[in-house]
Length: 496
Length: 130
Image 1 (spheres, rainbow over the protein chains, first blue to last red):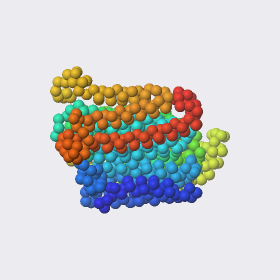
Image 2: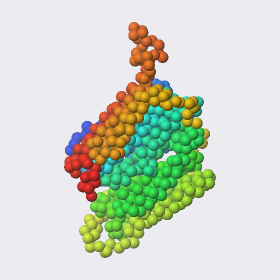
Image 3: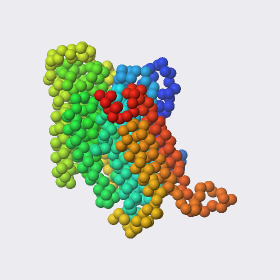
Image 4: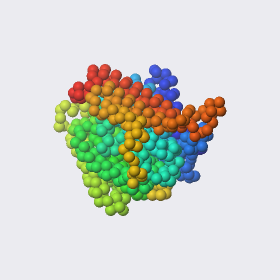
């Protein structure tokens, strides 16, 4: 149990290393190894979450060096929870990926799965580390893997991956620069140590510049509006599995870093009174919710629509962080969990459509989809209802916490934004649902051949992960009180 | 609130001139990354930007009259206050490795783009991507 913080990311890096040693001819082996490693990581994460809830934070000092000098890994309630979310979603997506990987990029299984292992390992490293520079290194490991994953896919994928690389590097460099300012002033890189030093010293310009630069840098990685420019193209042109893996967990982990920095490292006065970082993030979030939803309505391709909806959904998390209160933080963390499940489910559905129909073009969907693929259509419906935020699905409850959090501060702008965005979500999801359920398929002759291609439901390895995720949305929705009371309450910092 | 003591213009420029050079380098890098239409130039801009940050860390560790932190009586510096903090240097070793990896991935992507579209000019690329 003592070694859990280091095992969780390490098993994925071991997986990535072993991947290169596999025989090239056995094409199913990389997938098996990836799923096995992720399953191991998932077991460790669940064990870690159980241990942390039962007996408190696990700290691990790498090489036996004591914290302010050595690198510390720590698994507290927040990081154990994030590990569990990331590994659960990636386990399901990787099980689903078997047919998609064989279909969309045959013969590239070894590099593809090594990159996924590095991505997940890097993200988990970001989550467990308690050292600010170590966080930068893991951030770049996961980013490099995601540039590679985004480049696999459509013909245009390398171009969007290159843009993502340039912007992502700007983000990471800003973080590093801000870290430099904080390091010059405090002389420490350990998060807990920096958090204890900052309140003791007077706030000087270097601290303020450092905070601003770090928040901007993480904002780019998180695709916080208006720094989201890289996201829509990257998600649209990447292969279905890459998108289904990066969209639900990649930006969420950046959101976790923001929560970690703003609530656990920087003191509260610094980010609320000295410079209104929280307020700015909150209002940028509000703007992003509306802009992302409106842009999503304008899209014709299902994947592109979901990409813009990701911008809107990550903005809900930003809005919750911006509230800077207990309720806001509960809403933000719950939305991290809910949105990870919703987005993974929706992108898996779009992957099922792409594999079975050969396209994910909203205007060409009709009720033959529902007749041929009833379960996929059902999973899509549940996830869409959850995105709109109707009870009893999970999406309703995180928005509920955000609304009562805004109400507590009498912030009518935020309440209006959340309510209007639910209507906008309804517009773009009902547009798809209407096509799937109500439009009969005799309308176009050219569609005949594609409907003939869609002879059956997606194979079991693709269908079950999709269904588990959509069932998970109902379970998370009905069990939200339990999650909030027994897990999320433990993560709220005491000074909030 | 922000400026605790009165800082004269001379202090600001004379006392911190290495930082102003770093800032200039950063500006050049950012300009290259965001304004140049050629993807290779964007990548070069990115490298300049990263180098500026590496220099920033190294400069922050510098101290007049101090030397390398090796505990050796024969060198005559067994006084810890005369050492340069080695931590930023080691951090930047890692950052250089990360930077090399990023440039490697970026160049690989450029090769892929050039093979598919036969150009690295962004305007032409947008035309050919349609």
